[in-house]
Image (cartoon, rainbow, N blue to C red):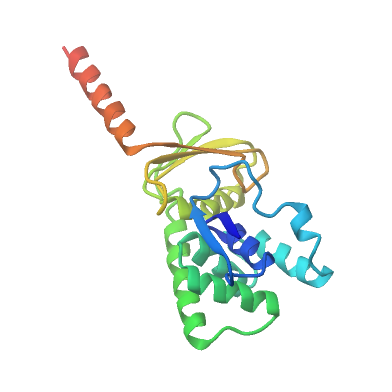
Length: 211
């Protein structure tokens, strides 16, 4: 059986619900670019109430600044494409166990890196025009915690966000975030070659209009 899953915590969780890697071929793709839900209710309904509760709690902490560090780190590792570490952290959390010392050390290091980067979300003016947040220097794996940071800072309405690319999909990503949500409802990607053409056109236009 082949599974086509997003390379994030939702994809990792879907693989776990399906029974793990054994006997399966998994094809990973960049997250949020498909409307398909990797964890539909029909899939979750097969879990015991306790397992479903722990899984939903885990997913709710992806990109969060507060909560159990083990659950937070599982999301960070998954978004980074650190598959073995993410799998270990996720399954440890779901089992209610403690991670190995090596996994715990690496997990905390990743969280420290993520938190340091997120501090720069509003270190300079990033909104232009109104309702469009420019995080071009942020890779896509940092966008969920960045959205949560913006919500904590008082931004309640909907907005667009522009970020850098992803391990599995280069280009400039444009995210639409509905009011009150920390998850995008739509993401599109401008390919690098189109970005170069667009930039070249803008430069040529600027030169042509110069006095």
